[in-house]
Length: 422
Image 1 (cartoon, rainbow, N blue to C red):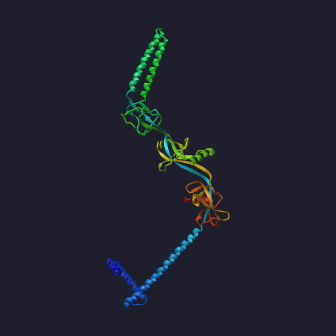
Image 2 (image 1 turned 45 degrees about the vertical axis):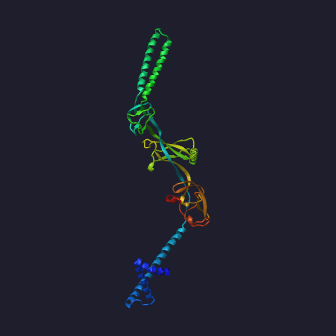
Image 3 (image 1 turned 30 degrees about the vertical axis):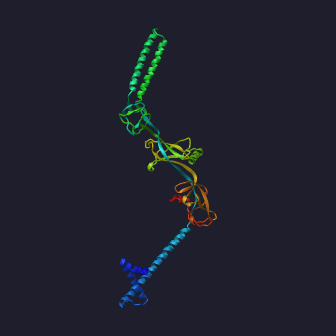
């Protein structure tokens, strides 16, 4: 009994909580009831209102019928048009032929750029850094004085050794005069002569050690960051700066074993090196061409790569030690058989296409891809220039099915390629 009472109270609760919604529903139901009763001949409203209701419902029905006819007509025309277009497209098959032409094949390798000579400039003697005669980034010539160190001990040592050499010289001269007068023996002269030579050697060594305090550029190059400042107390072997010879840059990159074998095979058969170019940051190509300068002696067992070195002249000193870039190795593949990528499809990691035979039937054929370029494949085997391959409409073709097609010349097809094959 309680459930019955709650069920009866449900509509009243709804009407109390949502008065606007309840009013709209009541108006709609009442209007529908009046229109329905009018259609059945039952006069619910007074005579003047009843006649107006009949006119209104008649106009509403006529308008609905006209709207229905318009919508049905548009619907039929729309779908008829698209069915005709789909039917036409489904049976449009375009056929072309592979093209034989010379193709430029380019391999890209990330590289590290190094100066052909990049060394540390070190202090040969200890002391105070008295003069710094270069600036960071400055270009210097061979023999230019870069740093001057005030020696602590070498100056006094050189003066002492020079005094010993002078004393040995006087003793030798006196003994030689006495020997000529038959006062002393010749052996005494030879002994002092050897003593003089030893003293002179020590003096020369002290002078050379003193000269080490003047640090000069060993070759033409560019000065890097200064590691010591003016007035610093430095020890023998301390790095003062680095010097880079950037006239020729050595560019190192790693080549996989398969590409290495292709490169060596090309050298053996054609006796020509590939074109070597350098791409810098931002897609800028370095103006100077390079050449392969060296190949290291062994492979890296962990990566399977072998390091190559390409040499690039750097007359404008644009390249600097430590830069990175991309090396481009380009070679020409003579008389390569080229097909559009979108003419092929892949099944289980193998490439296939449809070839239209002399019987007018489509036959599925596997092709082996030698190289993949931007929009085309270079074929190793599977098709030749005399074959007719399906370029468009392959999805509607079955193996062994006779097809009607339109032939498009390969030159026209290759000039209009835009999309890569999926």
